[in-house]
Length: 313
Length: 249
Image (cartoon, rainbow over all chains, first blue to last red):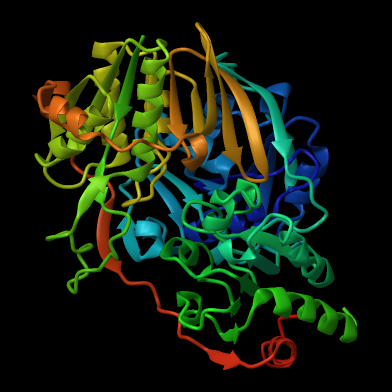
């Protein structure tokens, strides 16, 4: 039997996390299908059909799914679940929201935030904020899985899956979307950025974060923050990288004025290269950084900006 | 209206976790245990609803070993009215916890269940959603702000990329994120008072729930450690290394 991947998208573009879950689903085994649930999401379905290794794309295009509200996603996924051995979603706030409802209704345990697939029923997942890794075996029956997308490579393009419409499931009528306030930014999203520059308490104010913006614009990087910087009110919460924020693994992570609390490290220690700028040479961030610069960030960051200009960025 | 608050006893968030050499789990012997930090926020929110006159009773529930009664006493000292301790040995998976909580909800008929978005030990992030599904109730997960009406509630949620508001019919389950409120410290008089508040002792079989784990943990290992790299002296040297040695800019 097959695996069903639930697509992450905003009705216009298919998110990179979907391509990564497709990779995980391929490792679980069987043909891979994708469910695109949304409203006016043709472009997303088209993009999904081009992913390598995908056999079929199911599209549920209905106002009910415009914002992927958990209660309506539950009934939709359950209406399709019979045909699948495994149901997989990215461990985004959407996936985390609807997937446990599906597992509970199927009376199976959910395997949360898998980091790797050992075999069709055995997975590695982080516990204690990634300070330990558990290898768990799911019981016989359907597998319900959320995937931590930082550790899987995205499936490439080159597929030409059939697109099939599926009808909307019953509306449970329990909840409705009221509104949203999304951070507007021209920069890449934290979870998919190749380069991230993050500020900590050492930034001292929200105003000072604009210094990082300048560098981010040059490097096409996303701007992040430690929990300390968020709690101090410098930047909104969706900037937060760490155990209680976003888990990221970019090619380059630049930590500026971040001491390196365990909770922050939990969110970025899988980055390929870590650079740290901190004036305290004893700061724990230096224990995980590939390149450490002991310096006052208020001198180093403007200097970095100038040097990058000189280098042609 | 009643508010039900499930609370979990977990390893204290300040403790550095150690994996046991035999790879069967993490070492919990002689380690400080506390209430799951997210659950403290749930208790605080429930107590505030009572102080505002919106809730009539706050019931704290813990599923765990005998010592979980200490976690319940903490909730009672913060202002919960009574506790229910469902005694178990060993780990209880989110689905089993959700089934026990469903049975308690059937008996107690709360209007709102408020729980942490995840426990900081197994990091599953499942229980609240599973409970909502089993009850056929709506959910507001990762709550940032709650506005409680008579028949519905507006819940502002922390999502990837910003905030989202949903309206849920009551009864409902809400799971809380860090910025919903700042939990209080229990005062000494309240700690003394909490000792006299009732805690009902139950077992999973009272609710007809089998708590045998269904996921099998084959092993628990330590993640690969990152090694410290080199110190550079100047910004120019840093950029040179990033560009020419690491090739990441």
